[in-house]
Image (cartoon, rainbow, N blue to C red):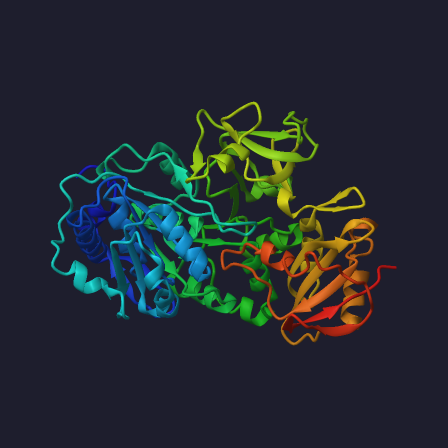
Length: 540
């Protein structure tokens, strides 16, 4: 046999090897089983009349059968949209309708949300449910059982069509160029290069602690299977359980977001050091800027195995940085490995190294468009260079071309004409031992336009109080410029953070606009949300 190229090859070479393992239950699916199951679903879709370019949607928890659904689409030339399982009924219905998905697959575990969707999916020809059924949905297992486990006569590459997380507005479908090659021809050169960068091969044991509906966890998991390795996923992230899985399965590769790294570091030292993590060769992190101190501590603990990348689901471009590079350029997310970086001001003029502006990636052709929304596509393009695109992130490059992120353009606070980027404030507050999670937003101020507010999720065992708020403000003084110090602090039981690590700031901001915030050193419950307690402190 030639060099293995895809799932079908490993089903013959290593049929009994686990392709995926549920870290919570220990249940696994072998390469032979994954091959046969995905073929049956692919045959079902083909018999239903779906052809290359047609669309299906998946609404699942982290389920071991997630992968057969993906592989069926990828070997059928179909577009597959994994839907955020934490989205509202309206958001899910919008995504399924907007994508023109003809088939929807969910699970019995998602039955509560699925039941509310039953009458809201008019374009869906079939609604299938895994592990059980409810009214209006048919058994997935029964639907595919009559289908043969053999491959389709012609297997075109499909593509995953993600929708943006909608943290700043309605989710947008991200359309990339449809692959033009057959599955048997293997991964594209760009994908192969990425796998080589992280030394992913048949010996890889990859831990994915994040939701599989998100671009990076799903993308890397599928690519590990393209390489013949084993994927271990977590049903939900728990810091101690993650370390236990690395130890138990001798994990070689893992992927994290900064919030997870912070929670790993917050474990008692006796728990952190109780597990053997020496099998790890590569630990990848992305999705949000990582505080410098946090990354330094992880490197001291795990060694020089951290690799960071910066990219977006749109595929506009990518940067990458290894541990040695990062130690020489702390805080950077690396140099461009896909596309050419440009930093521009609001007028679209390119800025020199060291100056902060909007981040663009230049490609040979437009790498994506937003489904059914040409205006949003145009808004992502540079005003004079249509193949330069931006997702709204702010940053700068140094003289060597290393990129440093500042924040999202949409999260910027303008107070008295001064631009304030919340990320630096959040990074500083995250280092305080009494802080489990933090979000910084702008709230209305009648004089300054906006003022800085910090919303804090206290660490376990820490009670919110006016004294704690003052302690946190004191902690920031000397670390940040005076105008960046929050005018108020509010405590909450839990921030609206997506499991992918992204903060749902739109939902947070909506609590305060157009309401005018009042600075006052009182601890009082919020009338609109009894689970929150407001701590308002005057800045001295």
